[in-house]
Image (cartoon, rainbow, N blue to C red; front, top):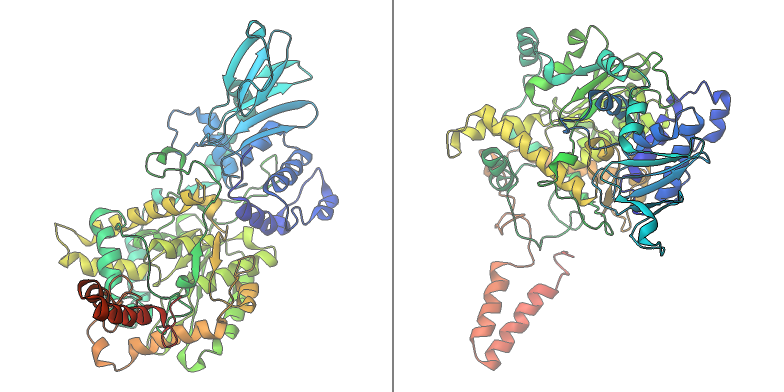
Length: 610
């Protein structure tokens, strides 16, 4: 009863794992099972296929269900340490199948049910004195006399209930999970493979080396303009996050044109819209139900899903939330030093010469995908997708396009679960940007230009705000924003959201989608990869050109408020004045003025808006 909101991401990761899964139980027969989940299957059918694979590969039924629908363990400080270690160990093996769902399951010998971590679906049961157990979404579905009922209760969030037919008894949640979590030494297993990024101390030498080697080749204003920053981004988006550690609250409604209809250069992020769970009821509240939400992410190779005995497991790099600050990024860049060679990072530069023009983008993307494949096969288990090398002579491929292209290429080659993807980009500055990068494969994101901008802005913001505090508040605000975006889709964990592609493209053609954003819906069609490159090229030329207006200041923007040099709007000062004038004058003149107002709104032959 319910739905699995993460099913798209779960299926994507099952497909990504196919090249790296092996099973001593199934042996060579495993290859006959792929694809495990066919296109068009329901969320329940997809879940069933995955559960059956785990059980047939040797996992006990209860353990397989605990892997697929774990409790909210991340912030549960009172949880038994063995149970916590069990969930943490399996977190990198399988992303939660998350959503409001009461799941019943059986293998013929055991039958049981479990509830999602939020408890968003009802499941009530009776036990009678003649050993009858009745479970349903509501109480009273069968007429059972009260004097025959010995137990009347409900499933609680994340809890499990099982009947063992061989033993002829009910096994409750505590006994069931204690037996599973103590069956193997999960605590020692997780301690042996886990490295927490927060607990590594950044060395002064690495910080100094980074300061030398990644010194920007262009001034801050030029780079901001190359990535499409506007005065509005700083004023309405970034400043409130830096000051209050929260997104600014804005009104609903948008009377500016879609990105594909705009005559201004737009970032690729603007061509995607977030999807939301249309039948989830009630929605998750990311503020009051923060206990069940998690931004923890694992960067690096994923363990073999069907390895039930911890044979040669890969190391895992754990980060508490996906937005990396400067010190975190330094640690990732030099991770080999901090982990004794257990992790190795390789940087993929997504910039290419401006002289190549828009036609150069496909060749550069192809070479990046080939370089990523070679790097993973050479043993690099963290790939850093970076656009830091932007300067007058070099432009950046949009980070979203490069990330998705590399992620999907590695999935097709069966190598994605052998490495982690960290995106170091100057383009990400608002929550939607981070959500998109996560949705198309990024396990962690370092918005270096946003942080440089915040450090510069901190001096002029009200209050005693240091650059460090401004950046810390920004990171916190993005984390809250990601939880808000995830909750609209009924998703509680960042790991379930990563790679889930829960977006719709508006204004991108099918060739671009099929090649670089496979599996994303794009019903309208629109521009292709060369037009995307052309928009990036136009922003680059504006940044390093000789426009006197842009010599000392950013573009006004005009997305949130009407500006003369800004984005077009349906409601302009002229149209509002006409409407006001029409309502204040007599019938004859008023109607004539109203017709002029109506023409301004309705006539889109010269300015496409909707």
